[in-house]
Image (tube, rainbow, N blue to C red; front, side, top):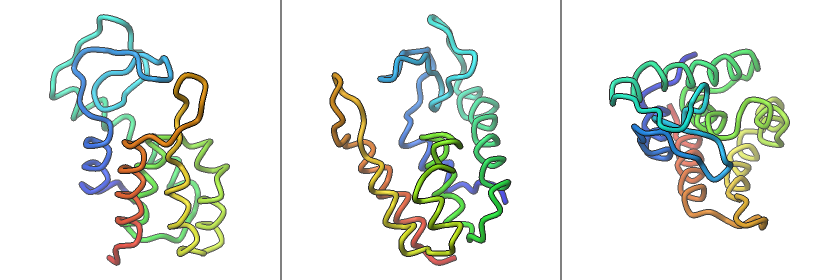
Length: 147
């Protein structure tokens, strides 16, 4: 399977577009739509690079992770998982209860897991982040939408 326009829309809306490198809250240099590989301070890119090659590269890594997981899911469920992996990474996804429920075919339980992933570290404390709450709700809604 491949990520559809729905997955890309959630990623782009959630990450925001930055044409100049910045340090994300985790301290990583970031550019485009959440791209972190080979990014350095002062780096700039074009809009075409942000929405093209860099985003394509990052989404392709998510697709490899998900496609190699051998899950029996539909396109909407796939797209919701692509965004989750984009945000948290393959290792976190595969170690999650979300993944275990997907692997067991327990889709209703899997759908409820997205909204558990809404916390971020702010000044050494784990707090609910409004942006993550919104993102997880978009994933849940998409995951639960029949194809």
